[in-house]
Amino acid sequence: MKTIQSYTAAKQSGILLNANENSNALAQNIRDEIIEAVASIDFNRYPDTDETELLEAYGKRIGMEPEQLLAGNGSDQMLGYLIGTFLGKGKVLCTLKPDFSMYDYYASSYEAEVVKFQTAEDGSFKASDFIAFAKENNADMILFSNPNNPTGFCMKADEIAAICSALRDIPCVIDEAYMDFSDAQNALSLIGTYPNLYVTRTLSKAYGMAGIRLGFLISSKENMKSLKPAFVPYALNSVSMKIACIILKHADEFEKQIEEIKSEREAMYDKLVSHNRLHIYPSQANFLYGYTADKERMLELMQENNIVIRDYKGTDFFRITIGTPEENRLVLAVLKQFGEEL
Image 1 (tube, one colour):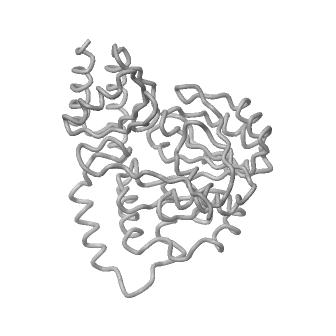
Image 2 (tube, helix red, strand yellow):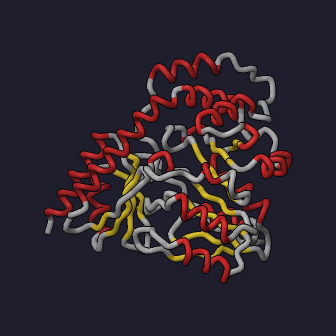
Image 3 (cartoon, one colour):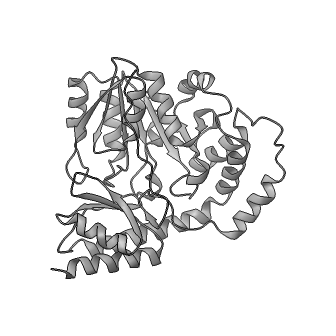
């Protein structure tokens, strides 16, 4: 029996700043609109497997044609589908270290080998070094998150272009789950130039829809002509698709929320960058990444205040999701106490 790399799900109780969710509750007017829309669904009928309304709504939002889009049960499913399509036993996936651990899960389920390019501690790396590493390891597929999870580092679009150009014979997949929080140019503008480029997106983070599990794959129309027919039918249920369409209709409201999260992130970084017991890295995502030699004590203080953050066990590193202003103030208060203990 093949060995599959397991994935540990996030804890679900306390002040949850461990899974990079949007901590803001959904506005009541949008909730009411969803309730009214769901009541009109024909539950006795299968969902629209062509995802017509959803792909038109999301395509309009990001400036892409519906024929370039595919939606599934979270961007995880899209990543798993691409790995299953392009990899298998004896094939090589090239990614980063550190990066999202679900890549290992899907690659191992298809018995593919995973090779990891070690980044700097802040997540940064040179495109030229990564390209050389991928070639040396005979990579069959490239996949990494941008901005990176967990570091928050974001690679520039021209560097993504350099990777796609140098590795033009293999699929290059960029996981942009956190791109909504970045000031950098995304990779969507490169799709028309590089036929080996695939981008994934999600509604789980910036749009606060982690509960409906809905993500997208974006690539060229030619690529989609082969990918869509082989994709599992009815991947999305009618309720999730209807909710997503309503959320996208209110996208401008979420943009304001995104700007507030970015502002909170920068304010927290400014307060913590000179902390005497922590080292915090700049971030282009909705979280901050850092380390401390006294992590166990810091985690004790967090637990005493019912705050749950991401602990990278066996290391000095941790990650804190940017929460609501109230949650962020509580985190800062705990970390202030942590610093004053010396």
